[in-house]
Length: 185
Image (cartoon, rainbow, N blue to C red; front, side):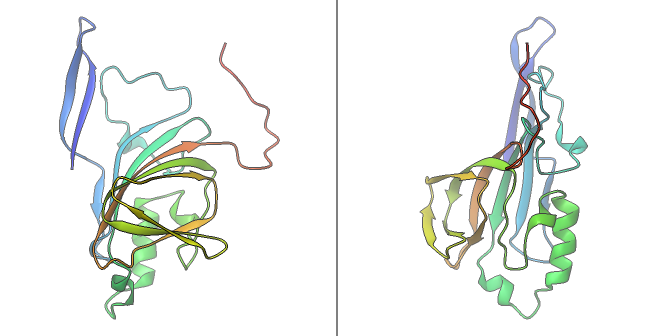
C-alpha cells in the first residue's frame, strides 16, 4: 500500500511531503495472510500536522484516547488459516500484543471484542461477516461500510480469500464515564 501525506512548504503552500509505503506495516509470521498497517494517528487536540511528520512511530496504543484517532488497515486471511495445524494461537497472541497494543488485550479467544471508540469501517477488498453478541452475522462486501458504536463484535472470513478493510477509530469516553465534557474555547 502507498501512503501520500500532504503538508505545507515554507511559504505555506500545500505540497506532498511524503509518498511511499506505509512505514508501520507488519505481515504476521504466526498467521500468514494477516497484515496490520497504521497509516496515521492523531492525539486529542492535535492541530493538522502541516509538516507531514509521521506520528505513527510514537503511537503506544492502537486505542485512541477520547478525541484521538487511529487509521488502521487490516488484511484478514480466511478463517481456515486458524484451523491449520501449523497455526499457533499463543504466538499469534504475542504478535498481536506487540503490533496492536491497547487493542489486542481486548480481543477474546473467539475474536469478540469491544472498544471505547466509534469506528468507521470500509471493506476495500473481499467479503467478510460482522458478528454481534446475538450471534447474528451481517455479510459485508467491497464498498460496504459499517459504523461500529462501541459494540462487542468479531470479524469472520469464511470466504476462502483474504479480505482487506480500512478502519478509522475515534476515541470516545467509555460508557458510564463520569468524566465531565470539556470543550475548547
